[in-house]
Image (cartoon, rainbow, N blue to C red; front, top):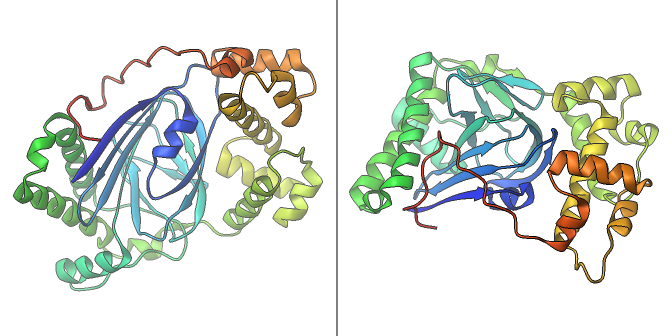
Length: 331
């Protein structure tokens, strides 16, 4: 068993540590960013638990590995996954190799577990008498409340063990026992009636948003305009606005601004202060007025662009009291 529990004050560092796909985090509100991530690799199932202090839009490209994504706390406010609300009693099952947007509320904690397609089919057959498979499109399912509570409780207990007593999880018998408990809880939720057939499915909107993101990734350093975005996404302006509101919780203009602001920050973090200027990076990402850029940047990230460029030492973020302590966890 390998476990790692880390704290971050930069969303770029946070996103590098995520397993199971490639994530891009775009903070969507002002304030100092803090993030915490637990990652536990059991022999046949991978686990993660995420916390972020600020609301954010996360664009994720999923690896071809079936996964369950759910709220860590039954009292949390819903997330929005691929345009569908994800409440405390629901599980999102992403399509293999697909991509999606997650609207992450401030202070929310999200959990996930995943296994190979072969293991999912095998354990489904052994535990329920029928094979289970990843859905062909992103879906949100609602298991029976007792099954959902069991999955959440088992996942949380394993994270706590990894954080506080990792030596116990290193014992083969204990490792196998907790892994089997999690697999049973996950399979029970997936096999609960025919929820997969009744689940909410993301269709045309998801395809348009994928084309939108493909355009942004192909031209990260260029200013983009709504007509060319609509042409790339294959939809009209009104439809694009509707899809962006559904998936991102904001207009396409606002998302483009947040994306450019986050990309500018990442460029400043990586840049050589002796060979780069704030003006050069601001201009590169389409910010023509340096003063307005500096004001917006400080409001969003809590420091000036020049401070980011200089790479001054930032204070360690305070711990989230509800998250397991990582002091004893092995990296």
